[in-house]
Each structure stands twice: as C-alpha cells, then as structure tokens.
Image 1 (cartoon, rainbow, N blue to C red):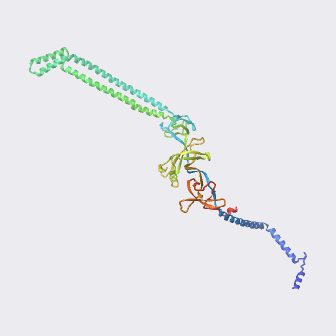
Image 2: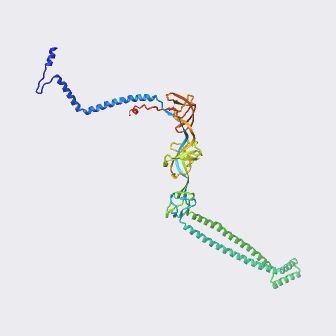
Image 3: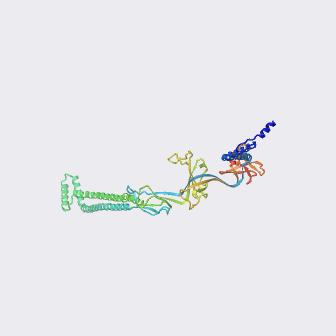
Length: 484
C-alpha cells in the first residue's frame, strides 16, 4: 500500500510543453467550465430568470392564500344612511310642443297644382293665430266671380222683362174689363127688359100679343141701343174670361219672381259661395300661435291640394310623450310628479307632472296589432307636462323621466342586501357590528323601497351604525387577483 502511494507520488509526466501533476487536472476542469459558461451565457441567464419568477410566484401565492383566508372571515359592511328616498318608474320619450299643426290647403287648381305667389314668413319665425303665412295665385277665382256676377245680371234683366210683359197684359185686361163693365152697366136696363119679354113669351108661346111685344123690344134694343140678349151675355162672358187671365198672369209673375229669388238666393249664391270659398283658400293662415317648424313650399312653384304647406308649433308649453311597459303602467297616474333629463342638458333635471296615462296599449288602438315591443310586452303612452319653459328645450329632444310614485324625507335606510328574513319568513332583520366586531340582529320594518335603498324602522337604529351586507359572491378567490 505504502509502496503504491509512493509510486503515485513519484509519477511524473513529461512532455515538450511542461509537466502535469494531479493538481493540474482540477485547474483544467475549471477552465473547461469557464468555457462552457462563455459559450452558453444567454441560456444561463434565461434559466436564472425562470427560476426567479417561479420563486416569486410561489411567494405571492402563499401571501394571496393567507389574504383570502383573512378576508373570508371579514364581513362586507356598510352604514345606515339618513336621507330622502323616492320610488320611481323610469320612462323614455321625446319632447313635444303643447300643440303642433301640419297645415294643408283645400285649394284645387289645375292638374299641375296652383302657383305659390308669396311666402310671408320663414322657418323659425313666430306668428299669431290667423296670420296669413302663404298666398296662392287667385286670379282665376276673381275672373270666375266676375263671370257669375255678369250671368246673374243677365238672368235678372230677362226675368224683369218677363215680369214687365205680364204686368202689361194684366193692365190691358183690366182696362178691357173696366170698359166692358161700364157698357154692361149702361145696357143693363135694356137687357133686363129684353129678358122679361123673352121670359113672358116663353111662358106663353101661343100668345100672339106677348110674341109681338118680345119681337118689338128685341128690334128696338138692337137698333137703338145696340143691345141683344146674346150680345150682352157674351160681354159678361168676356169679362169673366179676362178676370181669369189676370189671375193667370199674376200667378206667372209670382212664379217668375220665385225663380229669380231662387236663382239669387240658392243657385247663384251656391256657385258664388263655392268660388269665394276656393278664393279664401288662396291664403293659408296660421291655425295657432307659435313658431314655424317647416316650410314645404317655395315661391313660384306649384302646390298640389292636400299636401302640407307648413308646420307650426305652440311652444308656450312642452310635453314629454313617452311609453311605459305593462308592468309599470298600473302605478302611473295623472298628477304624479316627475323629474326629467335631456341628453342636450346633461345631468340637469327639470320638473314635470303626469297629465295623461293611456288606458289602452298602443297595439290595441293601432290598426297594426303588432305595435308592441319585440319581447311581446305591451306598451302604453304617457304624457308629462313640463313646469315652465327653458330656452334650451327643443321639439324632438330625447327625454328620460323618472315618475315619482312615492317619496319620504329624512329617513333611515340601508341597501337591499343588508336586509334578511327571519325564520318565520314574515319579518326582517339587519345585522349590526360594533367597534369590537360584535354582531347583533335587530328586527326592522321595511318602508319605502327605492332603486337601491330601503327605508327601515326599528328600535335602537341610528344613522352611521355599521351594518353587515349580505353578498352572494363574497371575496374573490382568484389568486391572480391578488398577485397582479
């Protein structure tokens, strides 16, 4: 053994470059290792970074686990507030004017319409009710009125001439009657004598004396007085005929006068009324006082009957027209206050009041029975009258309103999640936590419920008390939430 060690210690290698001992082999290894590091420096750096990251993650994960365990044992809390609460229903709609009118004209004109002669006001102008805003060409109607007047004058003259002719015939007949009556009166005594002689003869036809007397009387009256029985009676018949003619002429006059009156009061008047009515349509007036929103005609162009000439709105008041679904309409009634916001005015609120809540859904009163939301929920129209007018308000603005169903002032309240049901499932309680972390359940009565807070009443409740809030989610258990 000793001989071997001695032999190893005495071993010497020689070469042209020098000698190497056992200690020289260790130095060579270090050199090789140094060369390896030089060749793989980038890889070594990457490995070092990976190892560092792994160690860091493990450290943070341990910390996160500890934090989760601590937070899991800590309750989520809030405080009892004292404030005003409101129970509201939110509706969305558009701002409209108190009254809006789309003005049309009944004027006829030709197939191509009637010419717009003059526009007296522009969009944005304010006009009073009854103001002439637009005028159409009325020359054709003036010409028609003149023609009707001329025709009436002609008819009137013709009727007048006809009546005058009849009146003349009456006068002539009356004059003839007067003449005949005068003659009859003068010859009446001779006629009576002749009639007596005739009757005496006819009663005694075989008495020659009576016959001679009748013949003598007849001859004498005819010769001396131009009177015969037949002639006298013929004159009487003529008077009767003339009197009948006078009555006929008078009836004709009355009929002509009635026709003239009818033509004047009805036929002619109706024609004139129609023309005057059409002529009055050549001017289009504002039906209400307000601002002109649109003007749909231009001077020089033609207007077709029935089209909208202009639109006018009475903006002395504004109304929000909105819709609400069937779940909320039962709670909305006339007279309820509302708070309204407009996109154009930011967070500023304006006061209003519900003035209309429809009794029927829009679908039920529309010709299109499918006028409801895509979900099939019926919608109802409501109107909210704004209190006062603001210069920034414009017709058509999008409005979001909160209709206040109920409100209370200066009450104690907590968020919904703070209230729990008792085991009887009929009463409620909240859990308070004092400064030492001690918990206590207090029975409460719920009052008004807003969108987030609930009014509470109970013994020992005070503003600022710490209350446990029951959350379904609890603290986050995602480790990465705590590592980042």
